[in-house]
Length: 394
Image 1 (tube, one colour):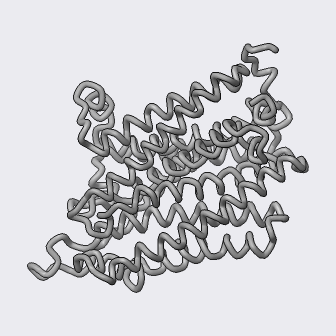
Image 2 (image 1 turned 90 degrees about the vertical axis):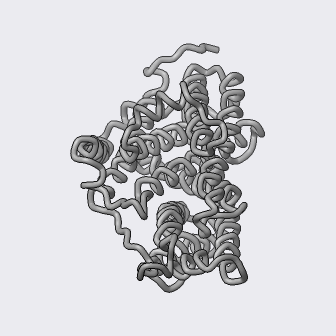
Image 3 (image 1 turned 45 degrees about the horizontal axis):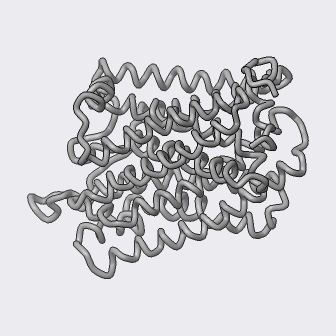
């Protein structure tokens, strides 16, 4: 068996059709404009183009990073599980999941890199001055390790070194799980923010990772066939159905987790936590919570999957897209909800809720992450498409 890499062996020139070229141009434009705005922020000053304040220092770009990072974790885990336990129905989706896991974590890094005022200092001091008691240090280090493992895994898949690829995939999955729980720990160990504080978030983030990963696997697999104008093979469709079952299960588990997490603020704890929960129930974040996070992100896709019994590809893809939108809004609700209650509520005539609305510039930078994901997905199908069908060798 040949083990070298050749674009001739992996590329699908027919994918470079007018639709793919047009979409690539659109996603590329999103990426370039977003990067331009993000880079301009380093010269103009983040405080002039982003709506973050001293009281609400984390905003849309933090939540967007969390969304991409959590989605990458889910994809990496599902790919590793399908590779380790070969012969399962998810196997036909595995190699593509590795690629999308790689590009989503890169998209997350691109967004967070433009949010941090001095990202180069972070890269330098992360190495020469590590703080092993910091969740943020561990999160960045572990996600960096995961990126390296996944990159090597994908290269080994391309060069057909499947045994080594499996080993790297397992290491990548372990690093992603650890990084994901550290990301939850960044929030859950902040006692000054009652809406975040507690042991649930790291496990909740892991559940959201499986949800987002399954949704992304369905969505990107479907559109891999749409851009080719080709009917999906039966074994791939069965793989998508298996991902749909994972998605439905995780929608139920995340919905239950969301209910109990929100209900817990009304049976004890400090007042600030309950006030923050009120912001989602009936306050400034109510529409985002009820209509987008719960309605679009959890209830509607679950109903759609149950009613269609996962026999309709368009319905599964729509449910997956709604789930991803819901997860994106959920991360924004969580990040914002934890900060908009003043820490000294009740003193000096402070308002019940601080105001935070993402600026247009923040949205443009966030769209750069979507642009990178979309562009890399399309070009991956163009240059590595044949490798995404070689699942039997794992």
